[in-house]
Image 1 (tube, rainbow, N blue to C red):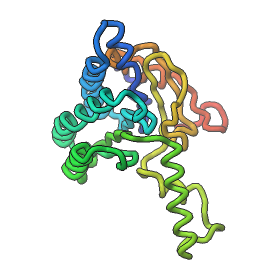
Image 2 (cartoon, rainbow, N blue to C red):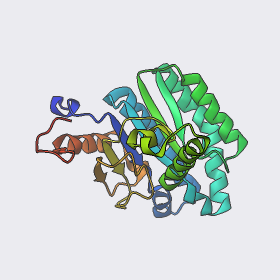
Image 3 (cartoon, one colour):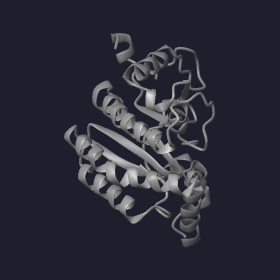
Image 4 (cartoon, rainbow, N blue to C red):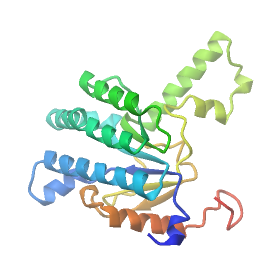
Length: 243
């Protein structure tokens, strides 16, 4: 990567992982082949973005709350993929001193998936060099609903006054207290947020690419970072405002 690009690395990058099924369909393969290829690419991009490029936080949209509506066989395969492969990512992230987190509802996830999640988070909990945040059984509407319920409970208990509720209060009740998203990437050519990190992406730069996620390699990620480096992030203020 060029020096100019290295000087403009997003603190928090997020990727909507999309296109696995279409990748498999183009090759006349079952969807499971696409998901496996996507997971392999996920491991590579995670390692590259956080370990090599200097992205401090990487959030990955790997399974939404709505994805449970898919064919039961496909959902089952994805759960197998998560349970059986998450640990290898955890070991590598631990070696690189990166922390692994999960955002989303645990309800509805199989116990072995939750066990793998807990293993990853416990193994890496003291690491400080970077954060990989897997958004699994995640939906932004669900996250904000859960946050409002928690705030309402505190108000009802008398430990929080409605007059004291501000943006920081809401942020402190989200699934994870992470920096706002600077750069959102979506693969596969779709150009929508699909209920992903709506609060956190308020001032994010968006990057949509037609590349299907299993084909989204290091060069593709470099191209995305180069585009981010060219953006003028005004954040509602004047042009050339510092990041």
